[in-house]
Image (cartoon, one colour):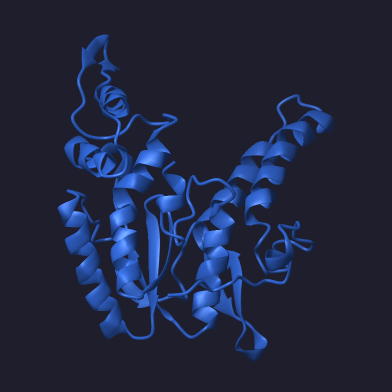
Length: 259
């Protein structure tokens, strides 16, 4: 089984783990004094996974030629373009059941390199943030990450990547702010909040012959889903009563793993 071999700082597509835990870990790092984040964006990651590199990493973990052949066939499966089948040489099938697992296989060596150097970080799929004390240290980490990703033939989006203060940056739809007593808290980032408001306008504006019950029936699942994910927000004006995610999230805390 591959999952137990992955980094403890990896939260995406793993049994018993979820994005909210990555957000809680990030908050705890910042609360501990790491106020600079190394935020690297990998554009179209799932479309650019190099098959040969991925298979090589997989062979190091699985000593079964049959499984490797099946994965290779899965990766090489053709895609239809205007009725014509075309072979793919990079990328994993969008929405494919194996794609998330293969993404973790691909990126685990970057996680392990960060661990080896003692860095504090949280990764969910291709979204990873590394937390450090000062900008100069962050710049060194950025250089390291560029080198690691280059070995995997992955591109870095310069316009969206940065070494900056954690305040004002976004991670998995959340951003952080400082409350009274210097307590670091979570809030919904500006972009997803604006998207939420726009969607509410679309769902409630101009009923077009719909009854109030029909509008509510359409609105309810969207609201519940949005609240289910962003219920960790510690901003009363957004949510008066956040849903319970467990002991840690109820207390607004997270365990800072060794880093």
